[in-house]
Length: 424
Image 1 (cartoon, rainbow, N blue to C red):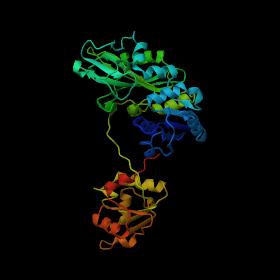
Image 2: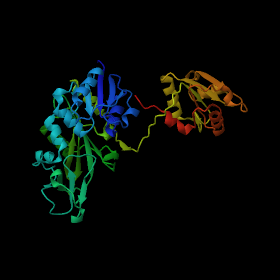
Image 3: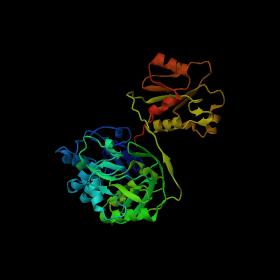
Image 4: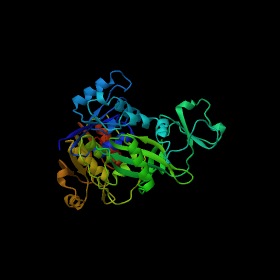
C-alpha cells in the first residue's frame, strides 16, 4: 500500500491530539497538522504548519489548496464542527478527501434544532418546546459544542435575561446516564462500528472519565436510524442521555473525531485509521479485543526550551536507575537523544561493577557514546565540555558546580519531562 498523507486541521485541540496518537505510528501514514491559530499542535505534530488563514477569510480555500498540493495531502480531518461544515459545503473546491458527512449531514449535525426536526417522529428524540412554560427544562445553543451556553432551567430566575430564544433549543430535562456512542460508516454507507462509552466525569464538555459500555439493542437501533437518514464517511459520534424512565434520548450528533474516541481505540478499533482507509476507497475489517476498558485523564504538559544542545551528560545512580528500577522517563529520553543523533555521555561515580550492573538492568553500554566512571572524590567538572551540552544528575551539589562553572542547563531526574519531545 502506498503511503497516505493525512492532514489534521485545526491541529491544536484535544481531538486533534487523539488523531495524532491514532495515526502517527502507522507506517503507511505520513501525518501533518496545520492551524490558523497556534495552540498545542506544534508540541505534538512532527510535520506542523502554522499561519493558515481563518476559514472565514476569502483566500482560505486557495491557501489551503496550496498546502494540500505542496504536501501531497490525500485526506483531511476537520476537528471542529464549524470547520467540518465549511469543508462539507466546499468539498468540490478542496483538493483532498474530507473525513466528514456530506453538506446536508454536516448542516443538520451543526444545528440541534434541525437535528431534532429530522428525528421528531423517533422515540429517541427528546421533547422540544417552543417556550418555557414548565420546569425543569434544559436550554442549549442550536450551534455549539462542549456544553458551552447550555443551562438547566429550574425556575424563572434561571432564565438568562439577554437570551435570544431563536438561537437555542428548549428540551426536556434528562436526568439519567449519559453516553457517547462512537460510530463508523464505511465507503458503501454501511454502519460498521457502534461503540458506547459512558461520560462519568466531564470537564469543559470533554469526557475525562468513562468506560466502554455494552451495546444494547436500543443503542444499536438509534445508531442505525441515524445512519439511515444521514450520509457519513468514516468516523462520527452521537450523544444520548436517559430520561426518567431510563429510555435514551438523543442529545447531539457530530461528524468529527471526538477526543475520547481513544476509549474505542483501546479496544483495538482505530476509528481514525479505518476512516482514512474508508476515504481512500479500501475495504476494512474490524476485530475488537474482548475486554472492558475504563479511562481517566488529566492535563498533560509539554514543553519547549529555547536552548539547543547536541551533547548530554547523564548520571547513573538515582538518575537512570532509581529505587533499583529503570527510570522510564530517563530511558525514553536517552533513546530520544539516540534518534536525534545527540551525543550521550554516561558520567557516574558508580561504586560497583558498572558494566555488570548495566547488563543487570538490560541497558546496553552501546547506548552511550562514552562511559566515564570516576572516583567518589573526583569532580565531574573535569570531564564536562560545555559547548552545546546539558547535564543531568540527581545530586544537587554536582548540578550546582556544573551550572556555576559552565553556565549550561542542568536537570534533576524530575526535570527530564521538560526535555521530552512528543513530536511524531
